[in-house]
Length: 209
Image 1 (cartoon, rainbow, N blue to C red):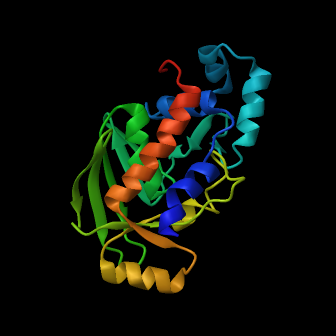
Image 2 (cartoon, rainbow, N blue to C red):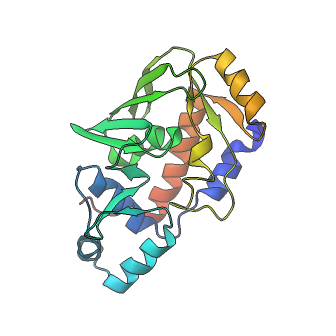
């Protein structure tokens, strides 16, 4: 799959409402739930338009008040820890952790665990690349998203297969159990994430919350 990875991921992770998604990303990065009214006011949109956009983000998570607490970037714990601007957050997959610093224009401390060995994986993800990965040979498992995946309809179909892998041996074990997957280097994964984020930014850049 490696030759088609970038094309497949760009096609599958398109975003029909990039302004709403980017606002949510940047607002959630502040560490607080985001209300529909906040989104509508910030984007000068109607509440019904915001509701329609959120309805298309099928995997979005809400709190008891109906405010957004996860839409790729999460206030709720996941296996992928993502600390940015002093806020302890989480992402739905390894690729999220690599690409979100591009839109946030901030470095993030990333910590996860290899799903094969359980070994902790740590690094600093920045807007321009990855710094100090540990273990040094960490790679990323990748799968092709459905062409209907979109921004936030990917938690089970895509994110569940995108992990940091601690070693070549662990990668071989992962592939033996997940033949639909491929393994890409950390740099290749960052480049894929950067391309996805640039595509979203080009269609949905808006002022920060």
